[in-house]
Length: 101
Image (cartoon, rainbow, N blue to C red; front, side, top):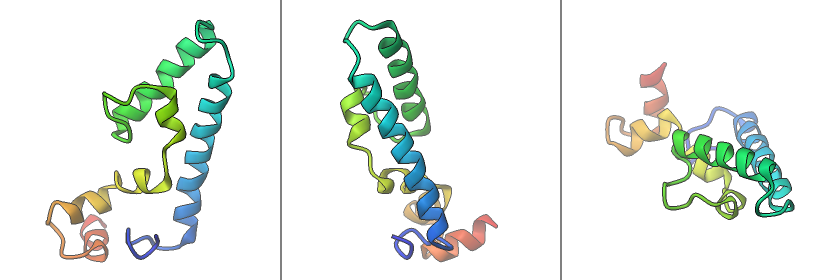
């Protein structure tokens, strides 16, 4: 994963993994509540809206079940460094990192 996304060290992977685990834990806790529970409706929609805004989830996948299916790669795909490489601006992910700095 470090080489594929041009990360500097494992700490960058761990930081994203922690974020994913916190989001998945929040979704798991909300899924244990009743369907019509006000906390589940309000916080669930806020969580999904935030993930759609940063581009990890799509508009069609607006359920808490899709939050549980998130992986570290989904977040690493949204990084500027990866986007610069995928659009062809940089020749490699490492070159993209240099261009961004």
